[in-house]
Image (cartoon, rainbow, N blue to C red):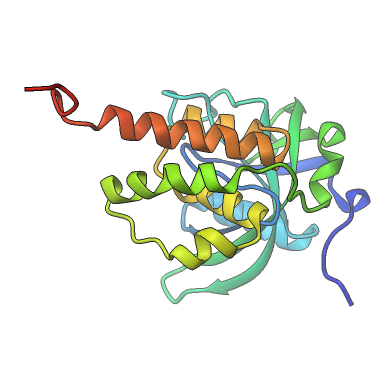
Length: 217
């Protein structure tokens, strides 16, 4: 028996969790620690309605408080792990299902926000996408980036992990700006996301080279 949802299972009316700098991608896993009353209520709703939550970023610089304007595109995740804590929090994991576009946002009737979600552009998110990635170029760019960020990396994972899993995991985990995270989210296919990821880490490495390091004596 498969627990994986189908395209037909996706809810038209989607509860959303606007969170700056947080990225969820299809088949990625995102741990969440829920403690605000509005998001406790959102989680209770999701548990009773298919366990779906839409992760989406507010526009950069607007923060998460109140009802900030949102980027057009987010990713719906499904609660696959869930626990209650003695101090009144929910600890859970979302597994990315598919991206969505915000069609409209209905008037608020709950403590949390909903959107009318349009999944039409993202039907292919249900199929793993391994094609066309230049792993060698990506890995070569990642090594100095990890060194400058103080990130330990397993060489075997970089060279042998399934490429979609590798690219999406790195896109979710690496310390990029909200706008850069959004660019990674909106890259249509894995190969395009890998190119964006490679460019971002190369730019980060270039910007951290000490002044004069490449000059000749």
